[in-house]
Length: 352
Image 1 (spheres, rainbow, N blue to C red):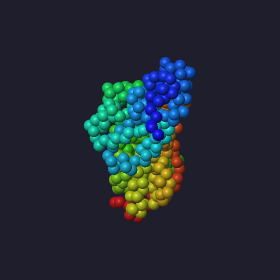
Image 2: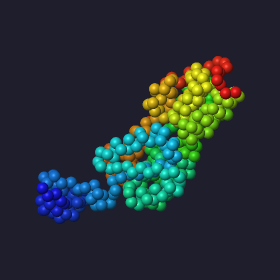
Image 3: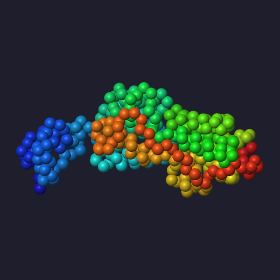
Image 4: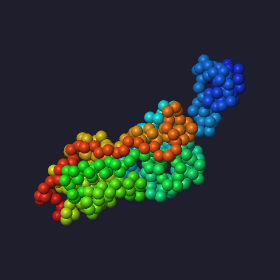
């Protein structure tokens, strides 16, 4: 049987090919009766326009972009992106849209990726890993590309944002440890050049200061497992080591837990440990990891809906596209890696 074409639909409906295109793409200027006649003809012939043809007629690529500038080793272990991407895809896949992912090793490559994708392959972007004084909103404005910020609203741009309050979870973690009697509470930071890394650090400082504690046990990390392990070893070598450690990511916390156990430091009997991410695997560690939980899948869903609405391609029930959209705040998930502060006893295997 010969393939059905748009000409066949136009002939069956008694209209021009251009009118068929307008009717099927929901464009204005087509009478309701004519539109229905075209839809009926297409259904009778079993014809639908290809996504490529629809894209040409509507001047859209039916795809959205995500450019990630991360060290591949850090990205591979990051629990956020797989769940976030799954949430985005759950929205896009329902009507034939797609996500174009590009991983860039440095800032120059990142900017080239945005320029290439904006000019040829995508209709808008998800801006993740927001940075302090981030240049990307201005870059995309110059490219006339739409985007949604995955994080708090940023000064100097009117792009919409979808945000989760990280600070609430970090403060809850510190308050939980203080209630258990801990006074030597350490913190291993994420990358503080990123907005969420800085916000989590600020929240930790705020919480320990409010509790009347010092901030001398803050050690730098970059969200990677290796930085969590290094910082943990350094903290244990402190003349007055911590009785509790809060990490800015679960991979760092898992690595720190491994260092503690290798040195025969009992968790939580001697040192309590709290992570940040809420990954499911943490519940199967020994002891199960107390952590701060967010919902990256729901974050991806909402970000996709906001960006689609921003592009005028949303469906009924999509949210407004301006301002900041706040999701449920991060919350403390209590498992088995925290306990009341221990008595000061010599630790077997502890570093001198």
